[in-house]
Amino acid sequence: MTRRVVALGSAAVLAVAVAGWLALVEVFWLPLRVAGVLVPLSVVVAVVGNLLLVAGVHRLTGSRAVAALPALTWLGIAVAATVRRPEGDLVAVGSGGLGAVTLAFLGLGGVAAAFAVGRVLGARPPVPG
Image (cartoon, rainbow, N blue to C red):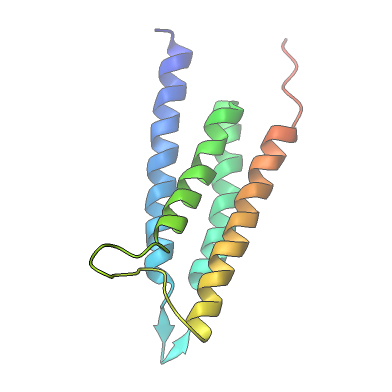
């Protein structure tokens, strides 16, 4: 194997691990309250995290495919959190204010991930030389 393949593989594993960890933290921050007031910190972190992680991975690796992995990982975990488990548990749940934060998390986080991947896919490839 060439060094490039090993480097891209390592970067892909690291990018997926970081994106997965970030998505899990964001999902469990959804019901975060400070002094009884719902704080939508997970929405802000989802948007900023998706934008920065995709762009950062692309900058470090130069690979469009590897750069898209964090967004796909985030989306998979965020959507999986909305599915009811066999025991009846649901992680991303809510009505009223919590429901609005959950919808904003999924919507704005998904839009940020799609925007970041679109920017990477639409970028011109570097000129060799």
